[in-house]
Length: 256
Image (cartoon, rainbow, N blue to C red; front, side, top):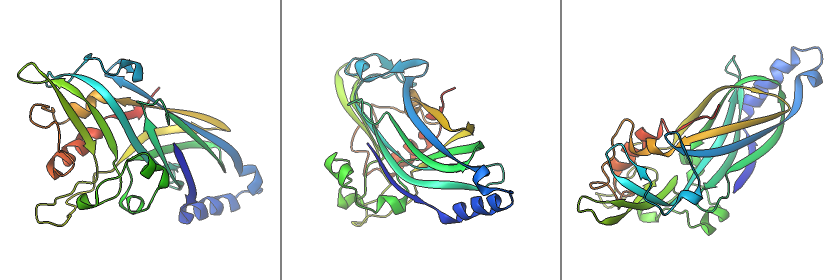
């Protein structure tokens, strides 16, 4: 589900208009464009869809054989930035629900100069957005309990693995804002939302931007994830959340 609040940061918009004023005709510079984002999922080089779920067919870097039962995550705040570090940020969010086959793409339209831009998104929600109330995410049961600081999940990645005793065991690889509740009240040691940098992309009147998500990286780089040690109750584990944040840096890339 996409929610396009469509609130642009006006410092960026002003910069665009200042550039446009240097042109003889501002209308020649600003053009209507449609940005089409889509998400494709892989396990290293093998495509993954919900048709591959509930089957022990994936092996992690640490050698754990897993099945995927549920995968959904949030992306938000699309940024497009030109070579002069001038750009726009769109206050949007989209729930990518691979299990249901929903939210695998979203689009929006705006008037901007055509050209080459650095395109970035946020994985999860930044702290300001995470403090807001979203009826659709509430309905999707994507909330984080108040005892853990409230707000919303960044990701729910659930399945089973074959444990050290050769038995099936569940895992809940859930990413949220890292929180420490050892003192009784939530304390946030580190931000764990992160930037997805897709590099430079030519944006024309209609631009398709395909994002590749390598799910194996969640368990691989730079931390080889041991599911026998870290498989559940990870939300109140601030250290585990920071490890997820570190591994997430290499999950997403432009699908070229």
